[in-house]
Length: 234
Image: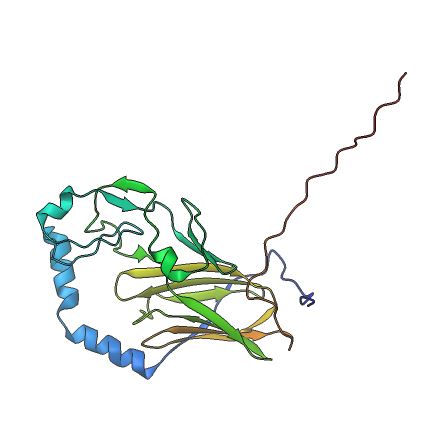
């Protein structure tokens, strides 16, 4: 399999792809607005009150708040961010790689500390999210299974060989991914569709050819060969 030879210049600008919002997502977001959830979240953060069932905001911690006694537990969490590359999934802090998504989610944290119930910054928590891809002769589609994504805070940027993804969904969750593409795309004919159950990124192929994979494998630089020839005696 020969990769397309028209590579992007390092100076090629990144362009934000067109964003389409489906009717199903608009309806789902409208229902969420009608609930009192947003007002309650603001009140909780201002008063410091922690609701029963609140998830720990530390990465990789699956514990939920069950009462004051929960604060006495040791929180095991990951200090890094989730990384998905070439089919492998791992945390940047401990790099325990696996190809199975459920195994990745169940990986015990590599650091210990106290639970974080209310995040003091913008409230978003970087989390892993199941995703896959498929292709046709003319394009590649990346599907990210993030429910109720927020159009105002979500975007995908790209040039002909690089895609940067930021999806905010379910209120406070955030999925981040940078993909160095195996092939070359036509950015102007690529776009993003947000639905109630997932995000679909359509990347128009610059050439109608089959891609061997989604991501370009990292370049392996071989160390220079050492001259093992013995020196001539003087």
